[in-house]
Image 1 (cartoon, protein in one colour):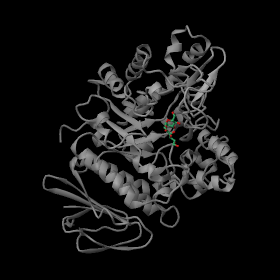
Image 2 (cartoon, rainbow, N blue to C red):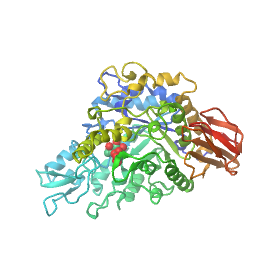
Image 3 (cartoon, rainbow, N blue to C red):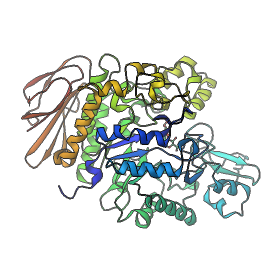
Image 4 (spheres, rainbow, N blue to C red):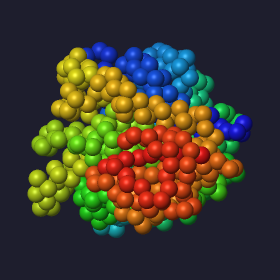
Length: 544
Ligand code: TEU
């Protein structure tokens, strides 16, 4: 179909620069390291990279606290290195998508330094200040995502500032037109460098009305997104993906409906939220519930059949490793990693692969708190143990759901530090890198990489995979996921067994298909009809 946008056929790949490849032995990944590994991405066939932040930053939150939006963190390299990355990626047909972190800056940004020094400074208005409440405490009882109150006091000027994340991440005041204009100019500046688009960090939080207590999806959100689109994005061949933890089926199309003039797609987290306890939080994970998971995925697919566009992912730098969370990271690790890839990549939307997912990297077996690095985990540990949670219980939750699972170094080889660094890595390498690494997986024609390569190529070459209508089957089956895609008179049917036992499955008549095997992880099938016995973690797609 000629009206496809490039990002509808492409697969994205997320790089967390700190943990991808170190080139200078300081134990921290960097941009020259990324350049040296671009052939791995070209070999997979990905169309673009979402680069987690590489801007100047004190790294309180590993770069999600930006102190200069137009500079590269020295740990990661130089601006010349960045320009080389854009060129070298483009030479391989890969675009670079920047992480736009503009709900907040670092407290060390020049704007905030000026803002906290004087109420008269123009930059004071770039942040959100309030007087103390009647009791001298914060203006409201909002909590910060990384623990403690969302307001911190600045003695010099006698006011509180808002930070929905850590105190090192003061929220920017989007109600100020001069601030918005600074952001737009900065986006122009990066676009002029030849980047391919933006992933927008917690973009659902920029439209807040603090005095009304409206933080998520606040009343100004869509005005600001439309303004950004008209002023910066319109008419430019970019991809935009907004991160929104609060979006629901009711609000999704406000961001990415075709005629809205806002964003191309969203990262939504309704399927992720199913996997932890709402009140106890992410360190109290719930067992994976396939029926609940399918309901979320099926609802979002149904919505986006009509309008808008989905992103497809199970992993990122904030989430546990998908094979550990949704698959089986022991005996069936390779097969279940391929199953997860198959069911996600054959849905409608743009798939995103998180570094290491393509070799089935697993959660880390950290058993001491000093092995963890993430401020979210460390702050939650302090808060929860103080409140009486046993250390062993907390660590169990952190091993299951903590963000550091995704942040241990990329496992390239079975050599020292997995080939990630010649020095001491900033966080320990997973001890299983002797068995799980890129070199070993790539050497196997039936490896996980080979499976991803096939899925990515299938999407690139198939209008059915890109545009076909999605239709779910057997929604209530606790172990099998089943769906098909239809375009004109062509069909692709997908069946997957989310379990380590074989399962007998009666293929619904409307789903039955004969033809050729599009992809499989446990031997090919040319037909799905009647009663099928699926092997443990078998996933198969048949096209007619
Ligand atoms: O994440 C947003 C976010 O809300 C997560 O931090 C999430 O709340 C948490 O993992 C759930 O417990 C984005 C970035 O992806 C994340 O890395 C940043 O820390 C955060 O924003 C602040 O910029």
